[in-house]
Amino acid sequence: EGSPVFATRMTISDLLHAPDAHDGDTVAVTGKVLTRASLFGMGGFQIGDDKGNSIVVLGLAKPGALGSDITVTGTFM
Image (cartoon, rainbow, N blue to C red; front, side):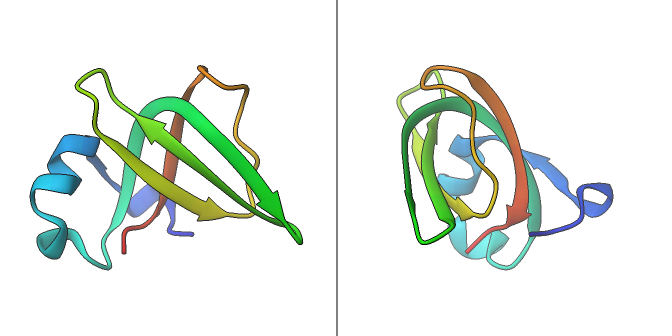
């Protein structure tokens, strides 16, 4: 996970429209939790925006309940 201090605030739409431009960047993204899963201590969840865009987040953190708002910070790949 990236440092929140050096994260660039992005929208999900911005990331999806120019993924190569942000590859490896530390970003902070806000969305609603759409799905959740965990396996062997690793978690994954999907967050989406109000425009129907979504991304998958992988890491150790557990998201809130389905439908809750969340801001995640990490390295975009």
